[in-house]
Image (cartoon, rainbow, N blue to C red; front, side):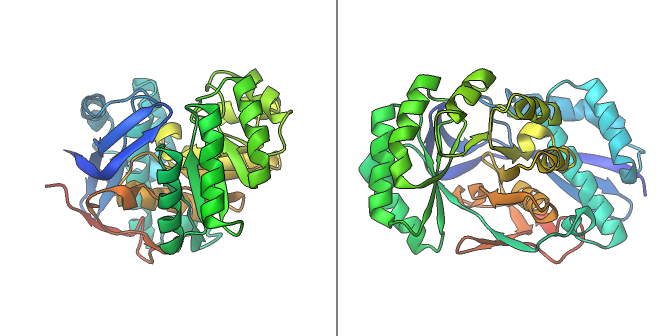
Length: 355
């Protein structure tokens, strides 16, 4: 099996409503779909740039893929580690691009051996639950959104905070009052607080039974993460601070966090995501798999990662539900908060509508 062609397809899909976090607001997904073709099969991949987090743009990804095409043509997808090593030498960073290639290669491998990706990566589970995320709005609006999310069958809600600590506390209070204590709540500050603000806010939120607090301080402030973790009872999760397996090792060595949020667009694909999960498992830590503003293509790939690893115990894979339309045909199904893996070979994606 040899790679014969790389197709590059830019996407622009509006969100159902603007989505705000502490770093800013987005109104659309500017992603890139790729098709890697052999004589027998097509492998699908997706890059979802997030300039405020990964530093990439759609145009940068497209230009990078033109360079990567020269590396891919003629290669055997089963040589995935060697191929990705060559891409790493050619392009620094470019994690969303590298994810698109990684997932497409794994898709091809699965189709060749006639197995779903999660099965040959570990096969730990075939379904799991995801949360649904509420973007930053006025506290009363977020409480109304939370009620609707519960009515739609979700039992876990992720709440964006990190703008104003006092108002953030009010957001958590209003949502807890609205949904009661049987629903799990997670809070994500997206680097929005200083360490002192984080401790003050999180201590005030503890009475509302939060499951975790995600990335309370800037990504570079590892000592600040540890300082917060040592002073609050709620588990602290790293997101923007953990891109690579090397980042995971450093955070463990510094005793800075309790958990990792693995995202394919940060780490460069399932292959590196597994490495991070394995490092965490060796340290006795659990992980979550999250997403950027991704379609069902990348959400399906991320779901295969969740399904493959024992210590990936949480998922935040809701972004395809926030788009006006999802171009993915086939792939995972999300039914009332339950993510169900497809039975098909590879990723299980049948097609992607790119026009």
